[in-house]
Amino acid sequence: MPESHPPAEPLAPARLAMQFEDLEKQTHAAHFGMWIFLASEVLLFAGLFGLYAAYRAMFGAEFSAGIAHNSAPIGTANTAILLTSSLLVALSVYAVRLDNPARAGRLLVGAIALGLAFLTLKGVEYAAHFREGIFPGAAYRFAELPTDGAKMFFTTYYLTTGLHAVHVTAGLVVLGWLAWGCFRRRYGAGNETHVELGGLYWHLVDVIWIFLWPMLYLMHP
Image 1 (spheres, helix red, strand yellow):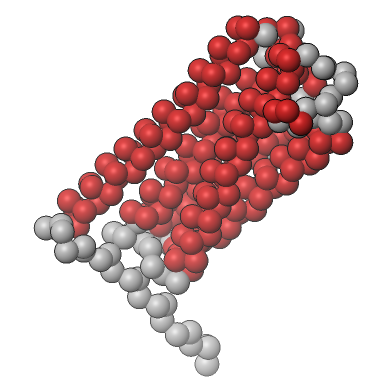
Image 2 (cartoon, helix red, strand yellow):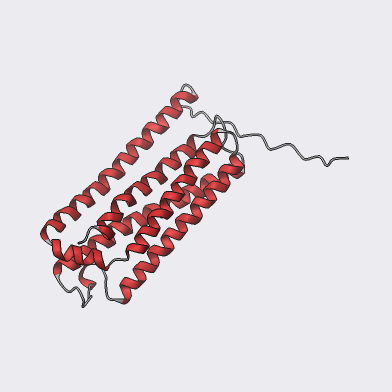
């Protein structure tokens, strides 16, 4: 006699907050709020990109020397890692829409593993810089590039990549929460908004790195 399996746990229904008339308006408001938040994040990094451009115009040769000293293989590997993680997150959103939260949870776990790999490689790069005396600001003591322009480049490097790493860490917490919810069938077809919004945040983190990668690793003679 074939073995019987217990029925799958039913999907938790979407909850309607008291300030909304229906789920459609709630979903629209959630997406609109996320896009406003993402726009504020873009403005934050746009200011840093403008700062980088201004200092590069002042210290062009020193910035090129600093970029040449950074590890292009690590920067490129991290780019591939984040792009792959974005693909997994996009596939997880698709899986949730198809009412397959277990598969979505596994995809999110894969994205989390790649995010941790990104932070590990960034830590390896930071450690190599620290051993050479490359620190931000007044602590800078790298004898090979002792100029003020080089110090400014690496200070900008730490500021932008450090802030990006904070966003990656926050994104990993969000993805972990979403994966846990998927495994508990809190998300599925008709209740995918949280996964969609978390995916949007992770994609922003990846897009920001797409700009940092050439700025900090490739733009040298």
